[in-house]
Amino acid sequence: MPARSTPEHGPKSDRIPPYSEEAERGVLGSALLDSSRVIDLCVEKQLVATSFHVPAHQTLFETLVDMNNSGQVIDLLTVGDRLANAGLLNQIGGRDFLVALVDATPTAAHAEHYIEMVRQRHLLRTIIDRARTAIDQCYATEEDADEVLSHTEQQFFEIGDMARSAMRPWNDLIKESMQDIENIFQQKQGVTGIPTGYRDLDKKLLGLQKSDMIIIAARPSMGKTSLAMNIAEKVALGEVADHQSRPVAVFSLEMSSEQLVRRMICCRARVSSHKLSGGYITQVNHGHLMQAADALSKAQIFIDDSAGLSAVELRARARRLCKRFEIKLIVVDYLQLLNYPQYAKEGRQRETAAISGALKAMAKELKIPVMVLSQLSRAPETRDTKSAVPKLSDLRDSGSIEQDADVVGLLRRPCKYPQDKEADDVTLSILDIAKHRNGPTGEVRLHFEETYTRFEDRATHGVDRDESAFAPDAEGIEV
Image (cartoon, rainbow, N blue to C red):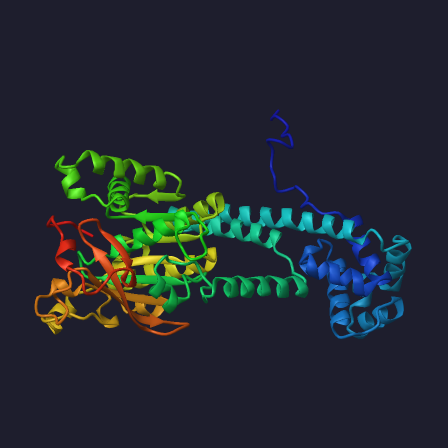
């Protein structure tokens, strides 16, 4: 005789979904007694018709909400007539059902308790449904396992967001907006996003805005990695306009975490990494390196240097980092090293478009700015051998990058092109904001010291001083 299955180890299909009929009846009875207050509480707690498990309760709740929204009086008579006219009264059990709800609920004082019980049970049923969907996908889908994992994670994170969010009182929203306005007024500058630490750049962008994808594009060795890491350092240490430190995540697909950290220490200490590698450092430089390391140790920077990441894997890792460490800025170095296996067979242009779309979707989902570095094609150098000024159309592999991005900055250094009219200024770096979805475009001029791979505000350095003092003393440094 086969062993009898137990609830713990036997079939699960006969399990009853979690719900409380008494709590559902309590909510509906309370709504019939005090409609305006109770239905407003339901809306605030995000209760909808499907939050109720019993079909008759779903129908009645939907009717009550519709009547409340249209300003109709709600009582036993009006609700009964509304259901009768819609042909739904007998379906829910007639007028006796409505009377029984009121009789079983002598007061609406406990409505909030009933509403929370219904919300909790609905949340559990939603988790079960998402888990069941994930199981079905695992058995039936032909998608890549990483893709299924990403979809599943996103669905469960959406449940968490749904559980936490609620309609906020209007007065609270007004107070929060006025607090932002007051902060801007006190700072005497209109930076509404995350400050970059560069005055002219912040003036142009008003900071890095939530949900924006910011592209920093350049030809090789122009300094795009250095600029991104300088911004990450300033943001993480609070060396920005509002003096607030913020956690930053960096996905480095080109350089190892050890290389990046070493570069950041040398950059902050103003010690040539090339000389350090050769052992040519003084006791003074050693002290500077120790001070820089001590300062950087206080920064909340999380580096993922996994090579060959797919866009799906990156998004999943970013999602987990944001949940765990409350990341406020993500840097991706760089876009062309990402892959998207599902679109690889359709050509690199289609794959790049999918990667770009995934990064923009990630920024919107996580509600934080995502700074993405990108290579430019050789078109600027073939089009103009004198200055090689890049254009938006030079973004490598796909025009979708330009379409998806909220901000596109094209970085160049005139000194790299001897025939450029500003080639003599070896510290000049120009970030051309070629696209700005919500603001002005134009050039931002920065000061760049190649020896230390460090960007600074141009205004802090005199333009008439001896520029040769800042000339690089090492060649071949990739920045």
